[in-house]
Amino acid sequence: MGRSLAYLCPVMAEKSDPNYKIIAENRRARFDYFIESDLECGIALTGSEVKSLRTGQSNIADSYASVEGGELWLINGYIAAYKQAGVFGHEERRRRKLLVSGRELSRLWQATGREGMTLVPLVMYFNDRGRVKLKIGIAKGKKLADKRQTEAKRDWNRQKQRLLKQG
Image 1 (cartoon, rainbow, N blue to C red):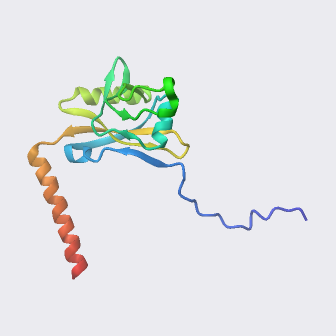
Image 2: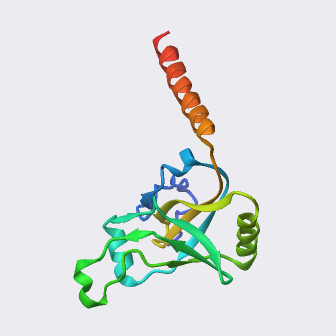
């Protein structure tokens, strides 16, 4: 009596996490750049910025990351003003500090030192713990011919899928 029956119950399948939510995505990044690797990093935000992000009002399409003064910064990222914050609000396009380890920071600094490499924000999201994370990619810019080749490849894959579906 009083024994637990937990050992008899099968393990329940994990549910998708309700906290994980994509806030902003830079879809153009994969068109304009070859993404060599990516890295998840934290971002230092104020309270009104987090409240604004919960409503989904942000844009990272025109932004980039830069290593300056031994720190990593998100430059030109847009987070809309939170009206209920009043005078305690935030500047919409301020520089925001990105949080990475020292080893990762030195790797990013070396990567940007090479010819043509840049740090491009790919996606901003709330992780499973409800924290705002930013995935940045170490990227090399594409030339116009490379963009055309990527577009032709994508069109061919679409056409191939149509043909497979028909036949």
